[in-house]
Length: 338
Image 1 (cartoon, rainbow, N blue to C red):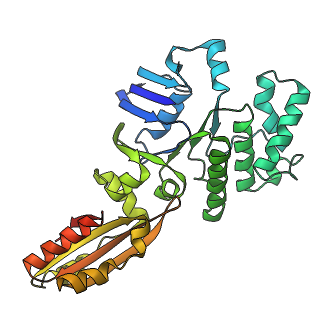
Image 2: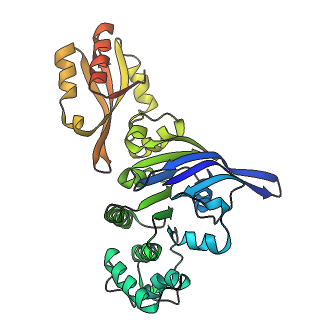
Image 3: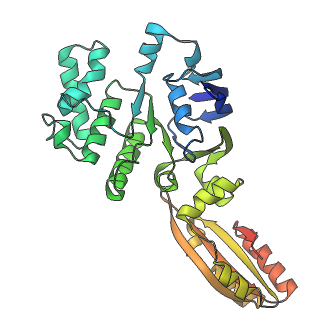
């Protein structure tokens, strides 16, 4: 669906060249909700703007539906962009136009007939839950309603790709939940490929099927969301995951635990139905070790249960080794802290 190959973007600044993107390679499958997460300044917004050529890459290729975006210009680029919708952080609505007028705007640019524009507006208003707001102006809307208008406008030309640049960052938590649920419904209903740029791991875990982590202009990790959460490889990915699944112990507690003999501290990550199984009970009964639960958390990755446990295992070396083998046999990711 979307192939990004050896993509680089270098800006000229008074202090010299600044590399915003450095040899990015990504494949975004059709129908995916693909999250790209990174800290401020990592390059994520530049990456999404390169996808629809709002920023022209310095080198590399971007192929969307087989079309090389970097080779397009003028009329051909404008026509191709009609199949790429974009949602912005601060809505970018036209204050002088009603909800209906804002949704109509990209259709007018695309020279749709007036009766077709009217039909399309009536189709989209129920999709975004704004049936009664067609004649309202942006000043009369809440932040969530404004973003729903932005989503309807992005969907107006029947795009195959929807790009979201920090689409929930300006919203409160409850409104963010409703917008993410709307995007999930749109993805499932229309099989629309969605690319989400964010610095919030909560957004990634709620909606994304895949995730890429960008750090200092480079992709440091990517893959299905389950594999990245269960087995993160980069320090920054671990930090992002810890922001929604905290598992770090205080230095004071670690100091106290260090006084215990014949003990080991481990974190255990688990996914899916194993969350409801009596893992701890089995460890105690089968291997004769003492298990001290230091920290635990269970939540969802989309609709799949995901959890972390931090445990202190107390027993002889052989028993603890057998406990490790048992945990691995249940397809659990185990990492030794001490």
